[in-house]
Structures are given as C-alpha cells and as structure tokens.
Length: 173
Image 1 (cartoon, rainbow, N blue to C red):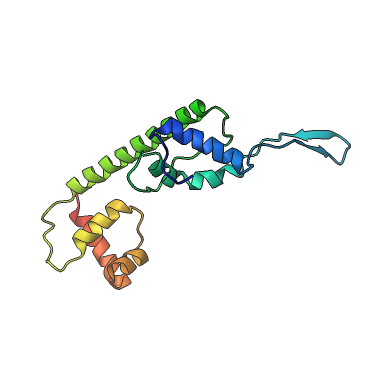
Image 2: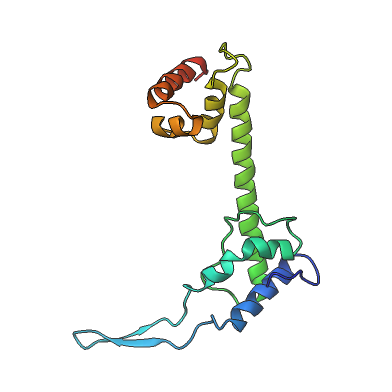
C-alpha cells in the first residue's frame, strides 16, 4: 500500500485502494436476517463501512506513494463510507474531497495572515513583554482560557489574566 506507485496520480491511487480493500477482505458479505420480538423478519443491509477507516488512516502516506505530496501531511480527506468498485468513481470522489480540503485550508491560512496583519508591529510594550506572543497565540487559538495562557507562557494565572486584558486593550477590535 505504501510503496511508490508505478505512475503518479489519483487514478492509480484509487486502483490501489480498491485492490487493498479487496485483499483485506473488507468487502460486503451476506446480509443478516433478524427476527423481532413480535415475529417480524428484517433483512439488514450487508454493506459495511466500519472497516474502511483502516484504509483512511493510510491516506496521508498513500498520497506520498501516489506522488501527490512530498511528505505525509495530516489529512482531513476521508474515504466514502462504501468504496465503489470502479476506480474512476473513487478517483473523482478523492479529487473532489481533496480539492475541498485544500480550498478550506487556503481560506483558513488567508484568515490567519489577515489577522497577523491586524496585530500592530509596535504594541508599546517592553521587550520582555509576552503581549506580542499572546496576541499571535490568540490568533491561532481564539478560545484560549487563562489557565492555558499561564501554562503556555510559563507565567502565573494572575499574570496571564492581566496580560490577556492588556492585549485585549492594545489590539484593534
């Protein structure tokens, strides 16, 4: 699964994923018949998606093997619940999911850069002040609470509260 593919691209990746899926025996089996307490008979769909996550955990390394990334990146691109048997359909699905995740990541990066530009270069604080660092931390983690600020900056909780109020006053809203 993680050895380099013979040709780079999403279609060879989809073919490899489907092949590994079949080799592992993760395809659907026969359905189950359940009889309820009142005597009714129900047939449960034989398709299962609880094992596709195994392949999903390999996606970051599989993208490297397919030549799509240079190193394994954390991936929020998931596989469909039911893998199709046609590699082209899976390739289209992977391509659209990857594009969606990439566009979302670029938008979030743009928002972070805009936020960084809003932080004034001269906060009118001493050189030893942790206010600029806290301003950048709050940009990356907007819901930081005082105990977390104290731990991250290595200061007392009282100092973290005071610093948080100072940064709030210094930054434009």
